Length: 162
Image 1 (cartoon, helix red, strand yellow):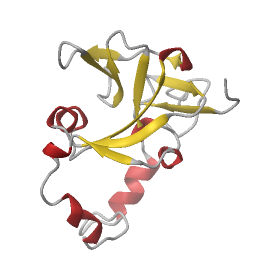
Image 2 (image 1 turned 90 degrees about the horizontal axis):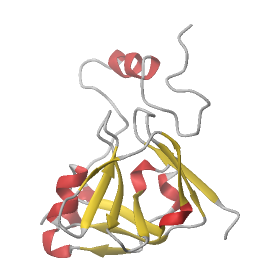
Image 3 (image 1 turned 30 degrees about the vertical axis):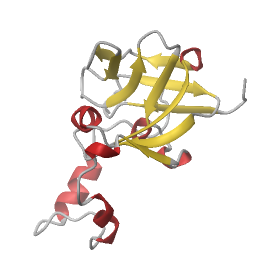
Image 4 (image 1 turned 60 degrees about the horizontal axis):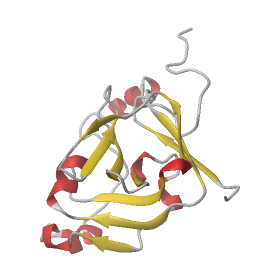
């Protein structure tokens, strides 16, 4: 087993996990079921053996999206975390739930029959830093009062208030 370990979890911090070793087959899936599960145009995933995943805080809630497939998510905040073919011994991790989502750039695309027709145009859209229209102070207020779990493990969460 690899000495590399990767960690991740949900937005609120109720569910945290580690992955022992590298994830395989990083990809984005465009199928309609993944779109619905992610609430997005696609879902980025990569897999590993089930025994390589250890829950370090909490546990996911599971939704069986079809007879052979279940999807793990945080019951408290709704973050999609896992995709699993039941009985396969493998599990896929939602790459956006990793503390370092850039560690596994997608190498392929799947479910292309469901790809939104404007997907290839997304990279060409104008871009800007996060900004909230006529209220730029709102960004500072959000950052200073964020309840989002940081991108690393913590001994306790939420952290004690001062």
